[in-house]
Image 1 (cartoon, rainbow, N blue to C red):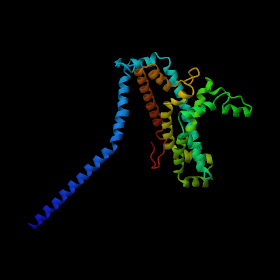
Image 2: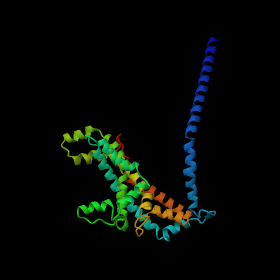
Image 3: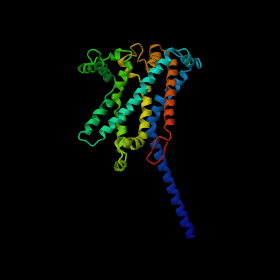
Image 4: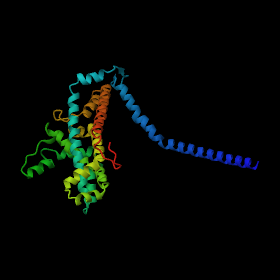
Length: 317
């Protein structure tokens, strides 16, 4: 009988402990959902909701004032078969994105390697290279427009000092897009910081062993640095593609798409369709096409990187 009483008391204690544990779990769950609710509300109200409405609007003819009129796939059919500006604007965007990603990633890696050397003042140089990434926006684009001025700009002034005649830059159909690409390279500080973190994560023993075996800097860079940085390179390439394909502010402020439509990229065309021609349905279809292209290119890069990206655990993606 005493044994039965002890078991009953033990069962009660166990039941009380389980109830208390459940209360703690419920309290933690309530706190979790309470804290993430602002983010969830923002995600649904400001991102998912507009995206779903944009998808619906892409199948309509809508001027933003009257009710949307459902027209099926007409916007997409017109875009690929009867729009003279669609493919050219997309081509200019690819031109800008390709040059910006390739040159930007290489430049960021070079800068990271330079500021990774143990020399006095390297913290200052890291700040200098990263500063343009922080200070950006319309004022910076206006300053760059002045710098590219063919008559009074600093670039042509410096070129004249070495006996060269500078181009027209933003006023030339041939030099306007390269000028925008050059300007975009000043924002490589973010990628440089990521590369710098990757470089500092490479074990020094690998370089010491390679140096002992007589490997030169190029051999060390090719067989140690690049494989160990391959996840970082992949990350910067993907982020660069996503950012470059959405280019809008730079040509909008600096060139307005000119001269002669040489910088009339996809983002500008989409903006004009929506806010100048009030074709919100067609602009929504363009936005979804750009999203599909971005996802497809990112997936292509990830597919190409299979077996070429090395991770610390020895696994390869």
